[in-house]
Length: 382
Ligand code: ADP
Image (cartoon, rainbow, N blue to C red; front, top):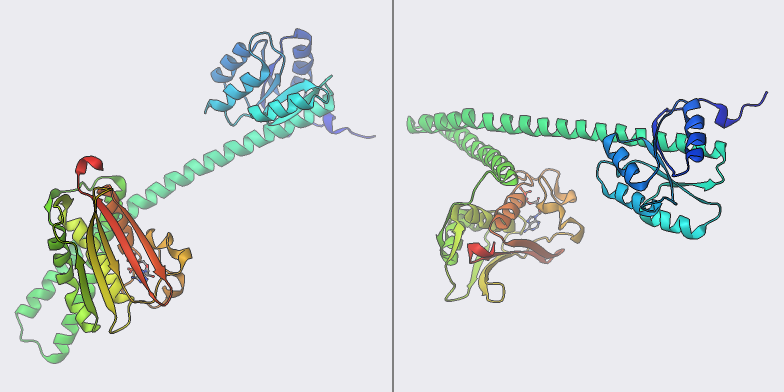
C-alpha cells in the first residue's frame, strides 16, 4: 500500500486563516485542513481578514489575491507591516502560472504561493511547511527573549560584584597607607608596599572605569558641565602622565592654537579622556618617541578639535572599530600586556559622545597613530 504525503497527519497542526470571498473555496480548504488537524478561521473580505489576524494571530494565512474590497496584495502588505502579524507566513493564492501576480505577491512580502485550481496535496504540504516555519520562528523568538533576560541578569550581577569590590579595595588601600605612615619600612617592606599600592590603584582604576562605562551606557552618569579652557584641560592631563613619559624618555610636544574659545564640558571626563589617549600613546610608543598633542578651533563645526599623535607601533585598519568597543584590543597584542584592559577607549568614546562630539583614529603600522576628537563649544549643539 502506498501512502501519499498528504494523507499523513500534519507535523505541526496550526491555526490557519483562510481568506477567500467564495464560500465554496473556503469550505473546501476548511474541510481539507481540519481533516489534517489544523484549526481553521475564515474571512470573506480583506478588511475581515485584517481584523481576524489582529484578533488572534494565526500560524499561517491562505490569502486569495482576488477579494471584493482590498486586493490580496495590499492585505498582504498590511499584514507584513503590522509587527504583530509580520512573521506569519502568507500563502498567496494566484491563478496558475500568473507570473505577474507572483512577482507582485513577492513584492508585497508573500512567503509562498498556491495555484488555482487548488491541488490538495500541494495545499497540505505548503501549509505544513509554513506552520512549521512559524513554530520555529516562535521558538527562536522565545529563546532570544530568554537569552536577553539572562544577559540582563548577567550584566546586573557583574555590576553588583564590581560595585561591591570597590569598598573592600578602598579599605585595603587605606590600610596600606596607614602601614606606610606607621613606618619606617625596611627596603623589602618598602618594595612590597609599592607593588601592592600600585597594583591596588590599577585595580581600583579598572573597577571605576567599568562602573562609569556601564552608567554612561545607561545614561545614568550625567555630565557635570562647567566653563572650561581647552589648554588648561590638556595641561592638567599632561601633568598626570608626565612621569610616565619621562620614564620612557619621550618628548611631549604641544601645538595649541592661540585664542581658543572656552566651552562647556565635564572637566573630570574630558581630562580622563585625554589621560587615556596620551597614556596609550606613551604605552604604545618605544623609548625616545614623540607624542604631539594639538588643539585647534574648527570654525565650520563650531567645535574644538583635540588630537594626540604618536610615533609608535600603529594599529591595523581592521582593528580601528574594535578598539573602541568594551575590552577591544589589537588581537596580536593581547597576550602578556600588563595593565591593558581594553576599557580606556570605550570610556573616551562614551565621554566624547555624551558631549555631542566624535572620536576616531588614523594610523599606519610601524609609523604611529593619531587619535582625534571634537567637542562642540555650545551645549545646545549637542
Ligand atoms: P588598553 O590600553 O587598556 O588595552 P584601550 O581601550 O585604551 O585599552 O585601548 C585598546 C587597544 O587599542 C590597546 O590595547 C591597543 O592595542 C590599541 N591602542 C590604543 N591606543 C594605541 C596607540 N596609541 N598605539 C597603538 N595601539 C593603541
